[in-house]
Image (tube, rainbow, N blue to C red; front, top):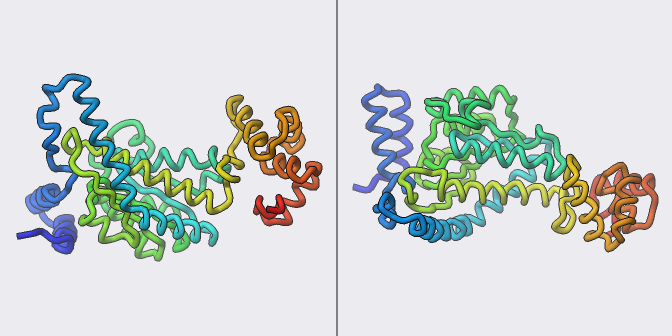
Length: 325
């Protein structure tokens, strides 16, 4: 008899409140349905392969990841639109995950402020087990739905926020609990998983489920599943920030200049975007207080720093409008 998504969802919920023996049975039945827990026929002799054979095999398997993510493009675009709308209304993007999945969320959230010049409070990541879990395994941290709800409550979740639950298995209690709490609070919910017919897909409003198939190393979802998560989160954050105006053309116009390498990149951005000389770009960057937006308006509109700032303010931060484009 086929095991349906509805049955698995009910079974999961029953298992979370039942005796330990039933919990083990629930976990076993759920695991049997996860594509990421099945054995990959192509890698059954992994321990006997040469280094070159292993690398070639993994490369072949990884080619399937981009295709799997591509099949989810409509759902990903829908999530981008939802997040943009939420942020414009004063909301936040909150990633929630455990283990490798949680670390993907932490990585993407950490990259947003320096890349897009936004507040670190705008894109937030929660990982089961807290900060310690970023660099090492915290046993049992992901096994509580209550902890997921508790951590979101501590972040003062509102209905304006969007919660993105990341769980390759699709069953992680910490993520399920977070999504349930978010949904109860009226917040938009998004699931990123590698197993479609699992509890997280039943709880979230938008489901992004690249089904990448069995891993080369059975159950090691840091591999293809993790790669697909990285790709999806890249699309979400980059798409959102581009739609919110934190890029100009395909340039990081709002990036933070925190070291010499980035200061050099800032000059190149102004040169690329304006067609000005390196010396003119350097001068505009200094005069504009190392604000790339101000420097670009100065160069393209041929105005001083004060006027450039006034144009940007008058445009409400819309750089294209300030440039007359």
